[in-house]
Length: 26
Image 1 (cartoon, helix red, strand yellow):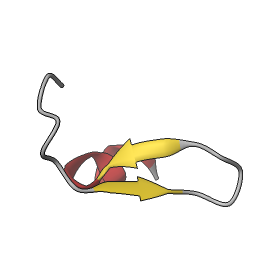
Image 2 (cartoon, helix red, strand yellow):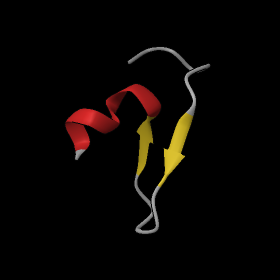
Image 3 (cartoon, one colour):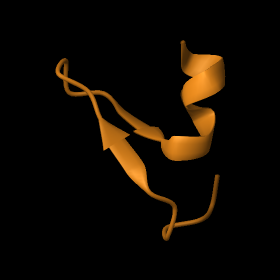
């Protein structure tokens, strides 16, 4: 993940995750 222009999602616990990585995160 070297892309800096990827939309990130910030979770309530402070974790940050790229939008495209949500599927594997959950």
